[in-house]
Image (cartoon, rainbow, N blue to C red; front, side):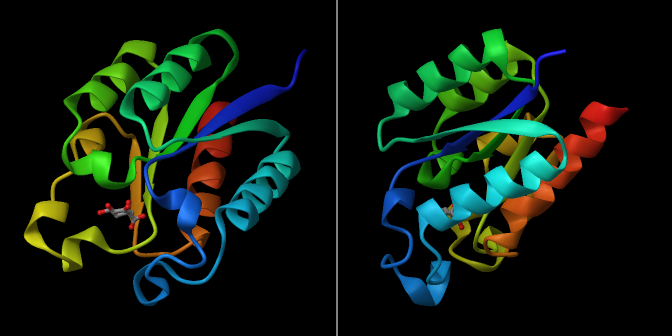
Length: 147
Ligand code: DQA
C-alpha cells in the first residue's frame, strides 16, 4: 500500500512566523513547524505535503489537489478563518477529515477572531497550544485514519 499523506495548509502571514508578533505567535518559524509535523506524521506512518500561501485562490487550489492524493488535511487558515466562505466550501467539497489549528487562542482575542468559518467543517479544532497544536492535529488525524 502506498504511504498515506496529510496536506498541511498554512494561510496568510504565517510565512513570517518567528518574527511576526512573537508575543502572540511565539518564536518558532514555519519551517520548524513543518519539520516537526513531518516528523510526527512519519512516526505515525504518514507523509506530509506542506503548503503556505498568502493568496486565497492558491489555498483553495491546494485543497482541491488534495482530493487525488491526500487522506486528511491540517489547516491553519490564519485570517481567512474569519472571512473565507470559499475556503470552508473548498474543504467541504473535498470531503476529507479536517483538523483546524490556531497558534493563539482566538477566543481570548478580538471579537472578530472568535468565529471561524472553517470550524463548521473541521472535525477537531485546537487553539492556543502554539506549535504543539499542529502535532495534536496530526495525532488526531493519524488515530482517526487508523480506525
Ligand atoms: C491565527 C489566528 C488568526 O486570527 C490570525 O489572523 C492569524 C493566525 C493563529 O494561528 O493564531 O494569522 O490563525
